[in-house]
Amino acid sequence: METFLLLNGLELLATVDEQETTVLGLAAGSVKRAAFTEWVRSHIRRVT
Image 1 (cartoon, rainbow, N blue to C red):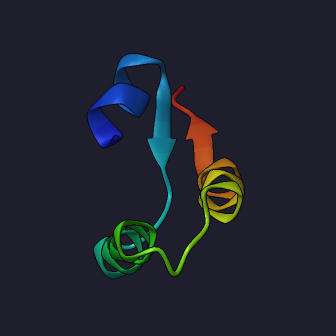
Image 2: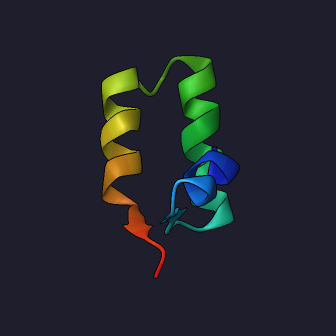
Image 3: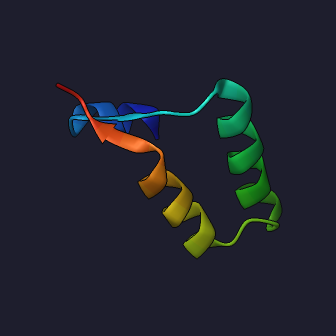
């Protein structure tokens, strides 16, 4: 995901631990797709 974001001029602003917890939660089903999408949107910024 990080590579995809960088290729599109964005970066993820979250710690490695936070990213891991979120992605593992998504994989386990405890984080729903809509919540994951919102989390990503709230943690990205345009690379300048």
